Figure (spheres, rainbow, N blue to C red):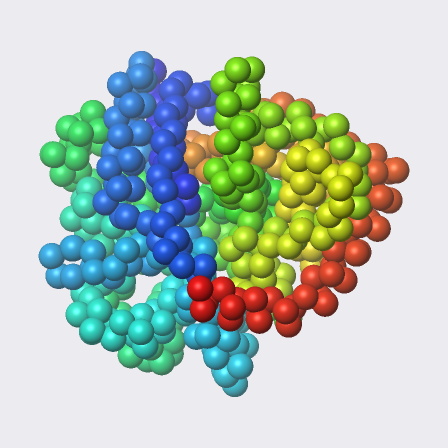
Length: 504
């Protein structure tokens, strides 16, 4: 049986899945890696650690797959940045999207006269997560590194360089840097001139269906693949989710909650918001993705699990349930609105729609009657409220009223999906295959390798549909409006608390 591996390099872990005909899963393997946070604005990773885990997940899948592996498609997280020297050695850790040390640089960019033109050309609002701001920060705070660096690259480019000895990046990952012109699909020369950066210090930008050949023997052996195995360079994880959700046709909305979260629609030409609240990235030839992302999705519950969930880990062992299943059990006993408890889920700042890197997590309304279940449910509701804020922007820009397709880790929680259906007052459709980024990478590879003809016609099998509850929607609408007023009143206080945190 012919099959293709979808490799997904995420924020907190790597996953490999082998897919047979019609997207059937043959084998899969996942492994986490850490985020290092030396300070309140830091979010770094060890690129070598990620590479080791990527090789390991692919190796585990190839050994478990019964079939002929025709190729590998690559999905990766966007907005990562690292500097390497002429010998391909890292000069910096990998700075990921959650690193906000470039907040001052992004604030300056937003105030400059040409900011709107930069946004209209790149589709990227000014924010410290973007490599544009990070490069300015490196230039100002690590000037010797900026001068010495041979290339500035993402984690996907680092992997491609190791496996194939070339510096190439797909136009999707490139368009998530703030350095790439989404209209002519090339590095934006005016922005590079502003940075004092030559084009040669960036990778060659290529279409996502570009096939990479000539796998280095030592890595081929490590992964259990032939040196002739083609890799398809792929795209960013969120954009590939639209492909896997059967949402390449304009107007179909996709919701994702993994470590972070997003709402996205596919468009046939570059499009930006006059107010700069959402972004636009290139997926592949003929397709762009218009979307809004939140920094804080599943990472909120992961923080709760890791920092305050020791008793839950013990209970999970006793009951045979996972920690997140226990969270669902606790939260399901709490009514909608969490008993008047509101959580603003800004543990790593905010992206869309307000682009405030200084926003911080806030628990409001806490009293003695509240339990662990109230806190968990308030966290889940808080994440959905932030997606709903993006949804309201989409409603201003488009007339579409189609159902929402849900992807990502949160689809394992019927409670979380039900909260979203009630808050949005929309039907939520859940495909049978949940790991959409890996599937999207595999589908793109199948298309590039001639195994799938019309990629736009792909439609996933549906697992379930969840409709809204009108009574719950009224409750959530009231709480959401309160959470928005709370957010606005705290905006100035967020700046002050960040100044205090930076003194610690």
